[in-house]
Structure formats: structure tokens, C-alpha cells
Image (cartoon, rainbow, N blue to C red):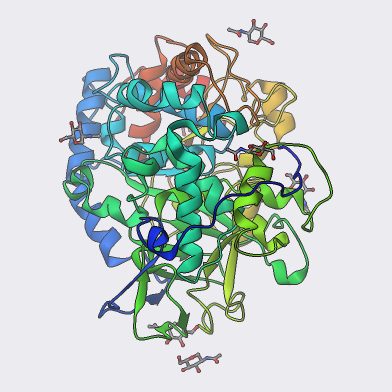
Length: 534
Ligand SMILES: *[C@@H]1O[C@H](CO)[C@@H](O)[C@H](O)[C@H]1NC(C)=O
Ligand SMILES: *[C@@H]1O[C@H](CO)[C@@H](O)[C@H](O)[C@H]1NC(C)=O
Ligand SMILES: *[C@@H]1O[C@H](CO)[C@@H](O)[C@H](O)[C@H]1NC(C)=O
Ligand SMILES: *[C@@H]1O[C@H](CO)[C@@H](O)[C@H](O)[C@H]1NC(C)=O
Ligand SMILES: *[C@@H]1O[C@H](CO)[C@@H](O)[C@H](O)[C@H]1NC(C)=O
Ligand SMILES: *[C@@H]1O[C@H](CO)[C@@H](O)[C@H](O)[C@H]1NC(C)=O
Ligand SMILES: *[C@@H]1O[C@H](CO)[C@@H](O)[C@H](O)[C@H]1NC(C)=O
């Protein structure tokens, strides 16, 4: 992260006519007839319908994959399997992309190929949220397609590097976008500009895919045909009114899906409709004659999930004069208002304002959201371990930078275990502390947690490891040469297959099929003794 420099840039102020042409600004719309806020007593009826329709497709694909691996697997009563990708900037995006590719029968031919087609949920946060957004926001092309048609070029000339800002006229257009949001009554923050810059790397379509909202995914063909796992992106909340900059370890974890935004966590325990984010609500009802749409711009949401600017924790304006991307971002914002530390947050009008069920946040008119991994849980597991969701097995691709070499050491998933205990989320299996990961090498190869306990989810832990490429790239590295992009993705494929280990696909299948309670192939016995932690 660079430090903020002085605001020396003069960018022309746009006319309101120009601003109105932007696809970024929120747009007033008729309010829906259905309630905009609900108590989190379960998953939404929309999600429930999706999962019901997805189940037979996922089961058929999962069954086909199990049979391909070993014809002795039974294919009745198959479990629901999820995949998560951690935070970790482009390192995690690229490693996670390789994992998806190695699981995707459209895009690889290895032992694990076809398992992606059997997934029910897919979650991402921060860099993992960039990956999920790029995949889902472009209607689920293959990773190869994204690599060749978007990422290779975009990552080599990253817009997060000041010298590259004007590539394709992006900076001028992005300025117009955030000024249009301001003109619509929503003062932008650093996260608006940052999210727009990122969207140019991740979304196809004019002006960095500006027309793509998170709720747009509900209309995409692969979603309407229930062809893909249900996507969830996470973020955390900072109660800025209490004078802190970053969230405590037990902070509320929010989830964004194409249908809903909210949290199952106590203190919020409510959801609103993603499409109408931005609407001013009080006690669950609109305060104006119209609701807002278009606030759920996907670039803004993937920027929210990866907002680490709160870590700077400083007051504006700064006197530092180190040039960097923040100087450019601030120069745009300075046209609309005097920057304060609130510009370090993603701002959402609080959907749970005066909603007395949401005891923790009902007094706040705005939510100030930051990176989903800020509370030291860098894997987006909380949405998937809720009793409301039926998930039996989670593939956790952890690309955190916990060690000095930017590899995971288990501390992030251990933190999730600790917080799950405190929150009474009993489906989370026992995870040992990082000292055990390090001493037993669990951070350098796949490990299965919760194998033996039918009351627990089985976690298949897939840590980033440098099988074929030095994949411990710094989180701050924002520019990748084409050879680095391809090397990282290829190494991610090795993460999913344990470096092409001949037994691993069978053992992965055993871990999944174990949740059915059916008789397993004989080969599973040695798999469990090799891979099960408990
Ligand atoms: C999404 O739809 C396109 C077009 O029908 C198809 O080519 C692609 O394979 C689908 N993606 C998935 C993940 O099934
Ligand atoms: C929060 O978690 C981090 C990382 O696991 C740990 O170092 C820190 O001590 C925890 N903070 C508190 C207040 O428990
Ligand atoms: C970004 O900021 C630097 C330093 O203030 C400035 O020299 C440069 O012109 C800016 N880039 C753009 C595209 O405005
Ligand atoms: C919360 O609001 C509902 C009506 O919306 C009311 O019935 C209930 O008494 C309120 N609860 C508290 C604790 O204020
Ligand atoms: C939501 O929970 C509150 C209590 O926290 C209750 O007053 C209200 O009736 C609930 N709403 C619905 C629709 O169940
Ligand atoms: C992986 O890291 C180890 C330890 O730093 C190193 O010895 C090895 O050469 C690396 N392998 C690759 C492919 O980068
Ligand atoms: C799992 O259960 C099997 C059979 O009940 C037992 O033999 C094995 O030791 C258990 N494994 C672990 C790691 O607890």
C-alpha cells in the first residue's frame, strides 16, 4: 500500500449531462411489493428455489465424477459440496483460478475435472471475491477464456499502477462514473474508484463492465438454468462510531449474494434485497416514494470485499507526498468533498436502520464495510457453516499470506473455528492452531478436517503451495507479466490435484462420499489415514 500524497491533480468537472450518461450512478425505481427487509430465520425463498433446482443437476454431476474416479462409489443421497477462495489479492485470484480450472470438466482433463460441475455453493472474499466476480459476472466462461481474453493483458498493465491509469481512457471514464454517483446524492469514497479500477481488470463490457450489478447475475443464462453453484461474497463491518478503524475478531460478517445482502450473525440477523441496496429504509420500510437500484454495481461490491484502506487509519488531508494510486483516487474524490477517514470505507445506507431486530446496527444510518478478511478470517466460511444452509463438504482454498514467504499457516481457518465456537456454529469441525499446521506440514498439502463426524461439515483444506511456480507472491503485487499469470494459474491447478498425486482424486472423492454414510470403496481406508486430521 502506498501512502497518500497531496491532492495536486486538476481533473475537469463534468457537466451534469455528462454525469447522467454514466451507468454507475444509482437509479430511482418503483419499490417492490415484497418486504425489503426480513429476519434471518433461514435462507431466502429465492435462494431456496435456486438450491432446489440446482440439487439434481449438482448431484448428477457429482455422481458422474465419483463414478469416473472409482466405479465402486455409490451415487445415491449425495452431499452438498462448496468451494471457497480466500483473500490474498491477485495471488489468490490466480491460484484460485487454477483450482477452479482443475475442477472444471470444460477446462481440464485431470482426476479432479468435473467436480466443479457438482458444486452447490461457491464463496469468495477479497482476491477470492475478485475471482468469483470475474467468473460469475461474465456468466461463467472458462478460466482459460478469462485468461486469454481479459486477465493476461489487464494484469500486465494493471490500473492500480498510476502510470497505467489512462489505458483505454479508463481514468477519465471512472472519474465521470464516481462524479455521477455523487450527483445522484451518494458521495463516493476511495472504494468507489478502487472498485471501478478493479472492474476494468475483471469484467468484460464497456467501461469496465459498469453495467454489471451483483443482482444482474440472477438474469444470466447459467444462473437461470441453475448450471452453477450459488455465489456468495463476504465483507466485514467496522463500527466507526466507536472510534475504531479496523474490525475486531468477532465483528459481524456480511454476505452479498445475487439475491440478498445481510448477515446471520447476532446483532444483525437480517437480510435485504441486493437489487435495492442504496434505498433509504427505516424499520424495514422505504422512507421515500421510490427505491434505489444500481447501487449493487459488481465492481463496487468486489471493491467492498477487498477494501483494506481502513488499515491506514488516517485522517485526511495528509501532508505526505509519496506518489501512488491513492493520490490519483483522492484527486477525483476531492472534487466532491473534503476527504475524511470515512473515505476509507465502503458506504451503504443501512438497510437495517431502526429495524429493532438488528440490535447492533439499528442506530446507524450507514454501514461502513471493509475487506472480508479484516477480522483474521481470510476464508469466506461463515455463510456456509450456518445452520440455515445445507452444506456437507467445503473445499477451502486458502491463499493467505500468513508466513514471511506469503503462504498460509492455518491461522485464518483456526480463527474461523474459534469464532464459530463463540457464535455457537457447531457444524464447523475442529481445526488445530497454526503451530500444528506448521509442525505437521498441514499448510503444505491437502488435509481433511471433520471426516469422521457426521454432525460436522468436512473441510478439505487446499493451501497454496509452490508446486511448479513461486506462488508466494506479495499481496501488494498488482502487476503480473503474462508468464506470471499463466504460471500462477498452472500452479493453482497443482494445488487442487496435490501436484498431480495419483491417489488424491480418489481420496478427495472418499472425503465427499463419506458424508453419505454409504459403503465406500476399499481404497478409502488408506485415504482417511493419510488425509484425515480427525
Ligand atoms: C454457461 O453458458 C455458456 C453458454 O451456454 C456455456 O458455454 C458455459 O459452458 C456455461 N458455463 C457453465 C459453468 O456451465
Ligand atoms: C485476533 O486474532 C489475531 C489473529 O488470529 C490475534 O493475533 C489477536 O490476538 C486476536 N485479537 C484478540 C483481541 O483476541
Ligand atoms: C496520478 O497522480 C500523479 C501524482 O499526483 C500524477 O502525476 C498523475 O498525472 C496522475 N495520473 C492521472 C492519470 O491523472
Ligand atoms: C420491535 O418492533 C416491533 C414492530 O415492528 C414491535 O412489535 C416490538 O415490540 C419491537 N421490539 C422492541 C424490543 O422494541
Ligand atoms: C423479526 O424479529 C422481531 C424481534 O426481534 C419481531 O418483533 C418481528 O416480528 C420479526 N419479524 C418477522 C416478520 O417475523
Ligand atoms: C518452493 O519453495 C521452496 C522453499 O523455499 C524452494 O526450495 C523450491 O525451489 C520452491 N519451488 C518452486 C517451484 O518455486
Ligand atoms: C475414524 O473412524 C474410524 C472408524 O470408526 C476409525 O477407525 C479411525 O481411527 C477414525 N479416524 C480418526 C482420525 O479419528
